[in-house]
Image 1 (cartoon, rainbow, N blue to C red):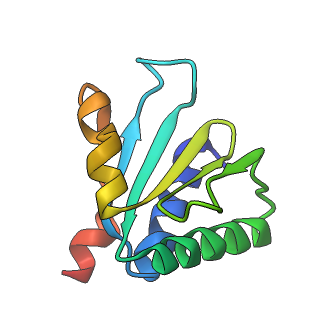
Image 2: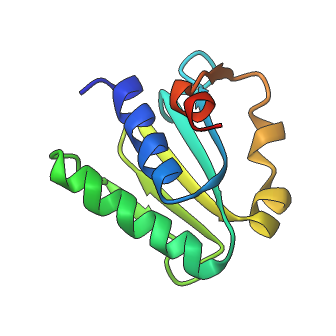
Amino acid sequence: MTSLELAQKAAAILDNKKADELKVLGIRELSVLADYFVLATGTSSTHVKALADELEFQLKETGNMPDHVEGYRSNSWILLDYGHVVIHVFTAEARRFYDLDRLWQDAENIELNFLSEAE
């Protein structure tokens, strides 16, 4: 699975669990941190944890294990690092506070076709 496919798969899983404000950012040209960031917002700290748990479970089923997971104690921002893809699951307050959307505004916005199908 390519890093783009992993990012899109992660976004689809999060979408199926009703994540808000889903975004996949291509950062390969801007940083050595990863190829893609996936940003998602949960409606509560419980929803954030459920999103991260489901994501980790389903990606494990496809043979993808995170290299690192952070933030389960806070439940306001959980980070799942899959090497070339880093997934950020926030509460709305944490997303506004950290404002990764603004910090990475020069990143490539990857179109998520399944989002338009659901509307």
